[in-house]
Length: 288
Image (cartoon, rainbow, N blue to C red; front, side):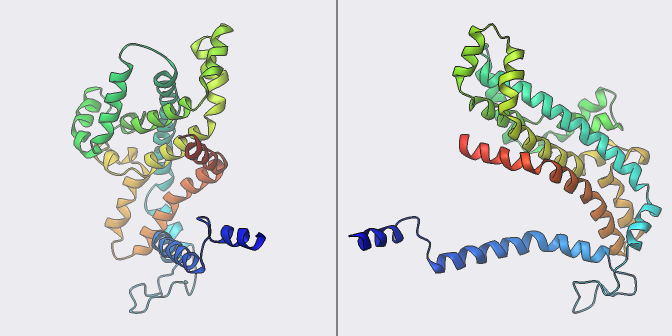
């Protein structure tokens, strides 16, 4: 009887055969190779010296003579730190706008009752259907009409509140039991007090997810800053790096070094918030 029960447990739905394990690990390794290999190749290229042939018929992955000269030359060629500061200003505005705006809007849609809430919700969803390129001309006309063309505020303004982030925060606030809000209302708490003392402590994980995605989106954006900015002094890092492509088109080592410099802040932000990020993803998977 015990042997039969043990056999039944091993033959249940949770049993993973050896072949299935091999298939899973094979797929994971394939996905890992596809996603990580280009990054590692760029890193390797950025560390290769001029005497190494990166166009060899059989290229080597590890640099024969690793050097940081390419990074030094990037800083000497373009004002990379000034461009990085401009990108940081844009990213801070976008992150602050999404953290504050998406939180307030998400809480209002999830916890407050007001006329037109369903209509607003439908409009939010409708904006997600359209690709960003469809509205880019109207965005530019609006920014120019506000007198913000060729400014960092004009670059950050369209991404200051993402509709997807609003919906994510709405879902996070909806996961809070309504009894907690009802008890606070009976105690005389206002909407702001309920948001501050009940809502925010329960959505910190999702808020960190939004912060990371907003930072990455603002930092990596290339098309919109290229359209808005005309003065080279206001260029963001992604736009400024195009000078490397024009000046050193025959030397991709510098382009790779510039790419690695632009990648470093994303690693720092993710490392600082990764604990909250995975907690937010886990909360979304369980509650959502």
